[in-house]
Length: 82
Image (cartoon, rainbow, N blue to C red; front, top):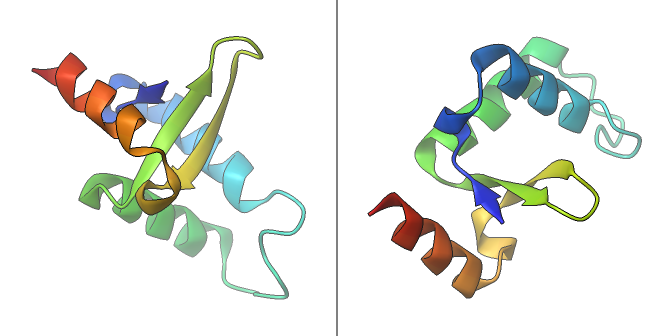
């Protein structure tokens, strides 16, 4: 299930993004400051290039690039916003 970023409280969204950008294997030796990485992800969400995926079974969220999400999920999200 896709969750629109604007449906989350600002603090919750920031914590989700920070968790994402600080996970093992996400920096690949990149020493970009945390705030810059957070800003990049936030901009990708704002532009619709990234999405938030919620798994009801595990009750966990993750971030993904829109291009990597099944088309039917995107259609479901669009239908729910109408």
